[in-house]
Image (tube, rainbow, N blue to C red):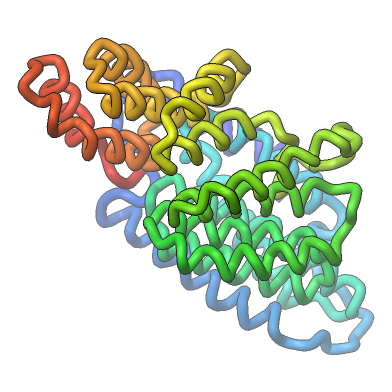
Length: 362
């Protein structure tokens, strides 16, 4: 796929987004999209086998491999940019799905060790994005498979930072499935891998930020604070070169919201409110804003402050309606579990019903 082809494919998807996303998103919903999902997982199996095979030692390079080596990196950066800027993440799926075919063909055609290493790195990049799409749809098992392939491909391509990021994304799956103990060894491995990478990049700081969430989930305040302090060291890096805007986007700008979420989970609303309020004052993507609003609503539920719950939950629900994001639905599910003591209030009861009606996959 070329960049003009990407632009044409994305423009075909634009009307669904501008129509207010009232329709069910065309990703991972219904029989037709179950078939698309199986196709992606089938390609994942094929690609995993190709990554594991040694190069053939033949200097001849196929057309798909040549195209990827010339334009693949730029195309993948564009896909990540569209993903990051889109309120509804599913709009990038058709272009990503098309590129998966090209990646598999390119890996099958490559003949030299140098070309194969580059294509393995591209594979690790692309499958982290596929994993993000599955993750946003709450398809955690599928996301984990994508991140596992991405980690294996990054290892084969000799890129420690790319490898550590794939491991960290895999740990996120366990955290959001409420399996913090399963996330911790993944994060410990990711941190060791990141230390062998490029020390001008923010990889190890991002790993530390996610480790803080895992420590918060098991109630370890001291370890959580140490990990957050380690993550804050990202601000000592050259911000213009510490991340790439794609598979590595951590620049420290989201630390306030992550600190607030950690303190909320640790049962420290006094510490959480300051961090979450500071986060909400920053420019945030739709998903990040919805997450902060959900946490502030949870904080209101903790205090039995119905006005605060309704104020923030209504805003988060509005963003959920705009995006059809399973991730936001999952965050609001966490709030719904805190509303039981307040259900005698009609406004809270209505909120609970609206949250229950949100799609759980996108």
